[in-house]
Image (cartoon, rainbow, N blue to C red; front, side, top):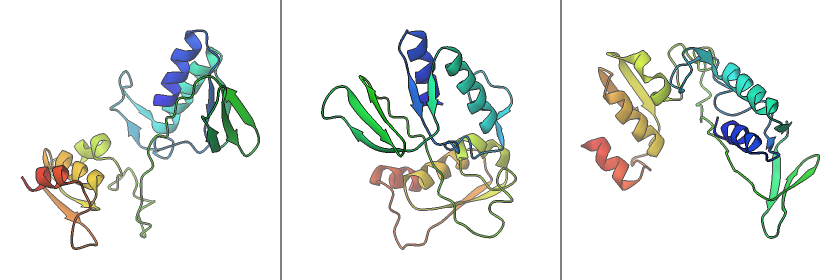
Length: 177
């Protein structure tokens, strides 16, 4: 959403924004579950939200390239943004890479996304209110998700494959306190 919102504002300001992103999109595109925590959206799916944001940006003149960026040269102006098919020259570049979830690849994980398996505690945590939940991981994101879920869930168990968490000291402090 950040890249598309930037495109809308840039286009409305009379600039000529170009959005370069793969067709598969980012985290919202991969979530077929309901999006209810986005301002102004009462009920939508990730792909639908992205679709209407793209339509809005296009309405104001945004051009879309469904490609991956392979290189960016910021050493001189205009900047060069290269893809597999073309090089786009621009006076400004907004980098909005979004987020990708790291999935475990275990049986049943794909089938249960949005129905018991989630990659976003902030987005979906309320669905597990007063339930026992599990967070897998030992980094900052896992610690943050565990803290978010601890506010509403009956219990939170963190499963980690190492003997120590990789999270930052401050996140580990908050986790234990």
